[in-house]
Image (cartoon, rainbow, N blue to C red):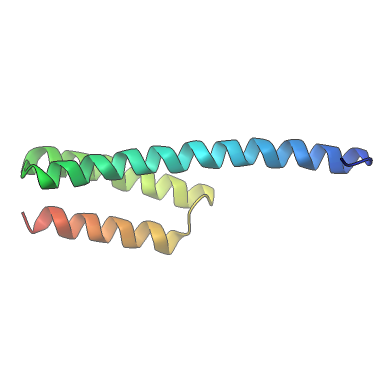
Length: 86
């Protein structure tokens, strides 16, 4: 355990940030899964609506630095390609 006050603060901040990152990643996974499920079900309308939401969530996660911007771009691209090929 840290003895210095600033180190104790950093531990608290790191814990808070890790919790936030976990929530954001989980949220992104949920939205991505919705798109994938809609694509599997061949539901074009639901897939395109879910894609719109998923791309927004991916962009937000990249903006916050939770995931890398290239990762967000790659995932969005692959989801868009999957929806377009329906």
